Length: 383
Image (cartoon, rainbow, N blue to C red; front, side, top):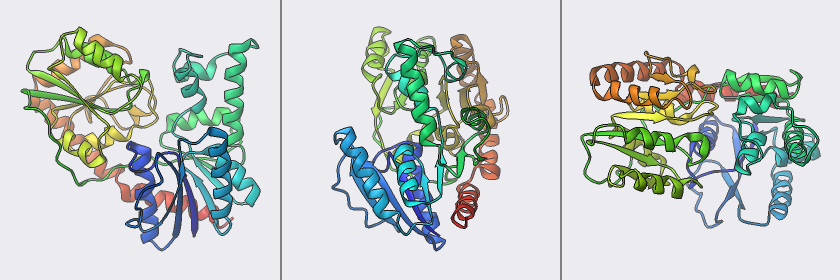
């Protein structure tokens, strides 16, 4: 099989999607498939010779219309001999290229792009589930959301197969096209024993709570900081990640007198994330929305007890009081209670962590995940 993969983020970018593409591409290459990756990048000055596949970069900072046109042209050039296009992101560009080339396209959908854009621009304040049911109307605000939905649906319109990382997302996506599109659920995965890179942290408090996420409103980091203010003074919070909310969150920490107990690491590498997790006593993901979070799998693989909100596909991996603790979204009291529960009962935390690690080994290993992708992509390539 010859495969062309698109990626909106790719190393040195960080995050689950950024790490997924190079690892899948390397695995498929070692299985004898020819793989090319086209990605957006902040700079073109990268040595990608260590990858066992071709990497082609488009400058992310270009004027959007020029970047769009260049991406489509490059996809058409690279995709002439491809058997299938796999859009990990860049759905619209991939759809147009697949249409021009007459090639089958597979799209991975990890969220609702229309809802995310509407959230960032302040056009819609509700949850992703509320967005799916909203009646947008014909005023300017409603027309904006209608246009976002149409663009999202058009981008996936020529897809021969849509892959989602959770059944929760599969249910959402099926409603966009009235069940007319084939959808396959392939769960996210993680490495069981990843390499870690040391990272310098200040002298540890007695106990460390960690969260790893983009610093955007729906990750609920502000409520996590507020919860830490209610805990014993020997507990600190380590926040790994970058985003538009960082300044606000730093100001909140200062206002609550937590400057010495809340540590902002900013953007760090995947291997450094592994080291931070290994140094943690509890991992928390306090989101109001998730597809199926990679970082929860990474925390479980690192044998760190997990507290997560019961949103999206998270409950498909966090089985409450067995592989972690699930709490209602935006329930600050439940968050504080669960944190205190694990802080004062480390043996319970160890049991949850052991169960979580076993679940990763049984169901969420990379080998199982990548074999499912290979099967799905090969089937499309043979059409």
